[in-house]
Image (cartoon, rainbow, N blue to C red; front, top):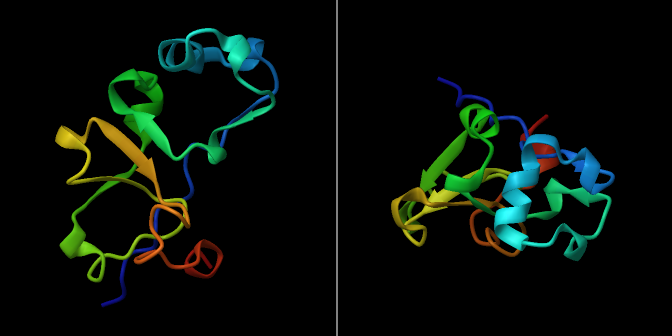
Length: 115
């Protein structure tokens, strides 16, 4: 049987100014403190690390996050852009985005994999 299609790319919002952060405002204040330290427009796609317990509840409820262990890389290769936790993220407290840097051994090209 064919493998299920990969989940759509997630966390791609773009915020033009701090006033546009909406439900994300408390996340960025908790992580970065002063919002003036952030560069806008702010693209979530440029972030590769998220604190699960700080994510807006509505956002977290909609995410598809894979649990990957080093032995899984060959069995369940990640696609660039996938969200995952690993044995290096205790209790799944952190969500990582598969980037060329983080997933260089197991990631497939996202454009080809999502066709």
